Amino acid sequence: MSNIKKMETTVGRHRRVIMFPLPYQGHVNPMFQLANLLYSKGFSITIFHTNFNKPKTSNYPHFTFRFILDNDPHDERYANLPLQGMGAFSRIFLFNKCGADQLRHQLELELSAKDEPPVSCLITDASWHFTQSVADSLNLPRLVLRTSSLFCFLIYASIPLLDDLGYFNLSDNTATPLLDGLGYNNVPDDERLEEQVAEFPVLKVKDVIKIGFKKDNDGMGDIISNMVKQTKASSGVIWNSFKELEQLQLETIRRDIPAPCFLIPFAKHFTTASSSLLDQDRSFFPWLDQQPRNSVVYISFGSVAQVEEKHFMEMVHGLVDSKQSFLWVVRPGFVSGSTWLEPVPDGFPGERGRIVKWAPQQEVLGHEAIGAFWTHSGWNSTVESVCEGVPMICSPFWGDQPLDARYVSDAWKVGVYLENGWKREEITNAIRRVMADEEMRERSRALKQKLDASMIEGGSSYESVESLVDYISSF
Image 1 (cartoon, helix red, strand yellow):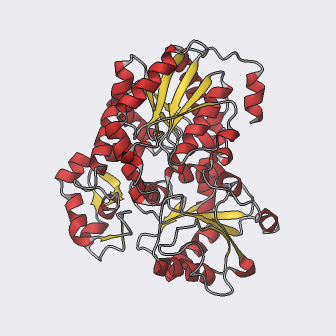
Image 2: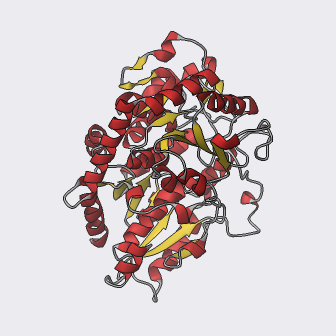
């Protein structure tokens, strides 16, 4: 926040940016990091948001908030929608289908406001694909924030091709759903699943299956295809990444998307502490401070995923058998059928570990005691781990996560992919390997050094920020 206060005294706020994040932790975090970055560069910020997963506005007195779409208490469309798990994404389907008129009305009010700076552009999450037509109707430039990797976007853009080749049909017959459609895991032993995907050789067939796409998957296919289409139609795309991490993908993206692309690793600019939708526990830091360097495994599987109790217990036993110290984020509701830690056996975690409901992840990953990150391989978590040079143990659930995990393990070689589900022996072996593999740790450090170099004047990330500021200022 000190950067914000410093810039506030030196830069006038003559232009305004309206920003509209998807109301989920993994999407809110990078949007608010971007908002803080643009504010530090002199822009006034207005945030559009749903009341669902409402942010803590008191943490952002320098922003203006407008709550839209589900702010009518008499609108029955939103009354009975799920609040937890993948069912909560039904809100996204409904907002994309029914939100255009309300968004247009609110934008018209903002554009005509006499006491506010003029609006330069609208920046929305890529999954708010309906916003492109609304912005076009108002002649308002719309930029897209894409919260997953460039590689993931290329895969999503290729779903029609992969579908035609029959990859997604295979999942109907041979894969076991991992809880409420969260993806696929524990697939039967089938040689086809271990084959490389000819069109994307870094992937295995089972990685494509785990994306979880189906033609009739409650509209998810429409969300993905429309996201790709309207991202290509946007005035620009902002990625939470950096050039040296995805050089080849960037070259392909630039051929496929006519609008400019800006790669900015947000975690190097601002933390996500203030944008957390969950209260963060800091009580473990005195314990963490006492642990030797690179001796602790940090474990977090994000804000949405759930596991069955039997799988949770495999994790517990795998951790115990590894004999490694650990800090484990177990979100309430993470274990299906449990409020929080009911399945945990007596005596666990003991002196070797700590369990918390939520943690300031970037601060934890930057702590010298952390030696490995066991993660669901969400893109934000992956980038944060790269930022701190921490090797990873990957247990992806669905969507972009299997793609990220494969890149971490097979392309960058800075982690281990637990490909066969939750098996205590494999968990133990993966933890021991990552904690002891000095070559992997050195590759993680080298990747961090590339990122750090990109941030200094003349570096790719530094230039992306400057180019984005100039581009928005040109509207």
